Image (cartoon, rainbow, N blue to C red; front, top):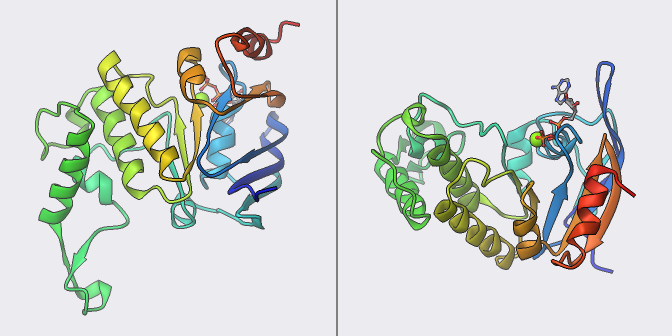
Length: 250
Ligand SMILES: Nc1ncnc2c1ncn2[C@@H]1O[C@H](COP(=O)(O)OP(=O)(O)OP(=O)(O)O)[C@@H](O)[C@H]1O
Ligand SMILES: [Mg+2]
């Protein structure tokens, strides 16, 4: 058996009286797309926020490459190779797309100087961020405007593009196509496939069963904080089984 790049063991998360995760376990492997499914409030976003360092599990373990790891902050998770696109996006409104891309990991020069004494490579960051966003074929009105002035779809595309640049092990996408038009959704799905082909484990949260059938190698279903099912290789013919697990029908 291959060691999973990411493993969650018996995860519990409580927010005061709310028991949002009740002993969830899952594994994600390199080069696979794992769909994380469930109705509104099932615990999907909570689970991925525990993996990406936003919340700390009340109980349970997270393992990367077989080693228990405490990811106490989002930047610790990113340094460990876990890149996340949040449902609520988490872009900085007052910054431009390029500043959002490189926030907390700015490029600087010259390299022979200690970090604190270098100059910011502003033009290089602008150029590189622009070229990635351009590959996504997203129309941005102006590249130097703060993202607060951009549409929901444009913001979502910027967040996904940023993840593709920095992905190293695990990429988590929480409803990445929710705000997107057809053409932009297609681009994002292509990016998901690309991230998988580059050897990442991709965890895809979506309510779109077409996307699950098209891309997922495996699906895990949460309901009311419990893992209620898992299906390998979801297809059009067993899609109904997944839907039943999601809504809780027998
Ligand atoms: N920070 C928080 N404080 C208190 N309760 C929370 C918090 N975050 C989530 N919850 C609760 O945990 C439960 C799971 O929420 P979560 O956001 O994980 O659902 P979800 O599966 O992502 O749903 P959706 O499909 O609507 O995004 C909900 O009952 C929610 O109200
Ligand atoms: Mg959610």
